[in-house]
Length: 410
Image 1: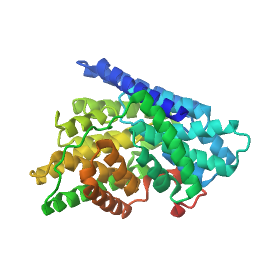
Image 2: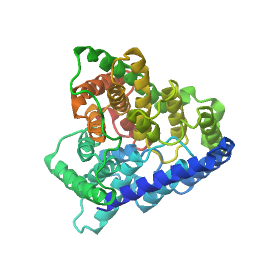
Image 3: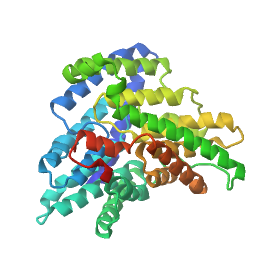
Image 4: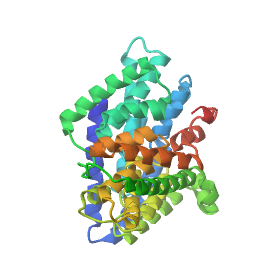
């Protein structure tokens, strides 16, 4: 119930923070060159000074803790009240500054951290119970963030635990149910992206756009993973030096780059990208053909700042933008259907968790007519991505938080 409550509040605060930024720069784009760099510097300072362990989406932290349940120092570093406060406060600063970050990954981390704190009140807690509650809290966080209870459960099994355990899964299901009921009571029942309006049936020729969407999503998702995991190969040496030794100067450059991208794209790359994807799906506003690339670049730059912020919603937005490319090749194909395919494919390519990806999009859009095409897109995109990079969240967990873990076991 606490996880559901925090998820709803955090969602509202995130929306309010982003809207405050949009109102501040309305008609005055130059203001972004003040707000974005200043808040980026502040966010980086707070993260490094007081909130270490809260950086990024938070999903790699959960994975690292699940793979090393006996490492008390690691658990203490990655969870607790300090991390909960830092995750919320600093990510809101990032949204207030217009950075391309989402709130869904952080909600996963918040859910796990809250459950880890509350288990202290249970007199018979054990390492096994602690692991169960971390996993259950993470699943409940994703479920409450998207209003996708089934996806939360599958996410815990496929992405986090990567195994099937009946006792563990019952704990996850119970937690997701109570978190979901709390979210439902406070926010009501809703579809994250609204109702997906597509034909009841598709012609055999629809196989072609499905495969093109999957291939494009897989390649761009793999490029994103490679870029985050191999930043030393492409980042200029001077920025690498500043990142290590002068983090505030580095943060200033990151903020200026984000402000430049946002201004040059007429405000298209600010924030998580939810509004842009929703408007494209509703048919109320088309996006630039360059949107997938500019949003992709903005997400990479924002993530490299090293502050709390997620990848889910921006990734779905990038996928929605890719659908316009596929639609240009297959003009006869319904654009909403292509958006669902590309969102599923791109998210699957990044996470390499195809079942979680298509179930999330399915629940967010009520796209029951698209089950088989979305499954195909997710599976193909995931396989293409796996040819070039490992699963992103597990690779980040191994690289940043649990270097002694055998990543191949993930």
